[in-house]
Every structure is written in C-alpha cells, then in structure tokens.
Image (tube, rainbow, N blue to C red; front, side):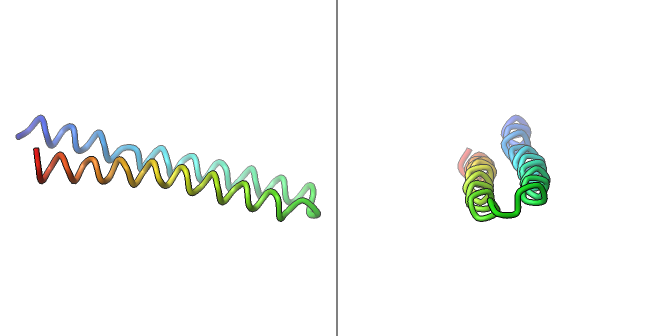
Length: 72
C-alpha cells in the first residue's frame, strides 16, 4: 500500500509542472501583448489553447493518482 501512496504522490506532481508552465506562458503573453497590442487576439487564443493542454496534463495526473489510491 505504501508504494501506491508514493506513486500517487508522484502522479499529482504533474499539477506543479502545469502551474509553472501556465505562469510562464501567461507572463510571456502579457509581454507580447504589451509590445504588439494589435496582435492581442491571436496571442490570447494561442495562450488559452496552451493553457488548456497544460491543465489537461495536470488533470490526467490527478485522475491517475485517484485510480492508484482507490483501485490499486
């Protein structure tokens, strides 16, 4: 059982990576919009797509952790 808890903890760490990635992407997008305000629509849509993919990775890690805890 203890190995399953360790595995679940490692699976949840994907949330940290997603949070860091989204933060960095948002910072760079803000800089890009400050430099070129006319391109803000395209920058914003690309940012939202990237954030959704990063958040999806975090959700997969969380679901994996729940499966390990409750099934394994």
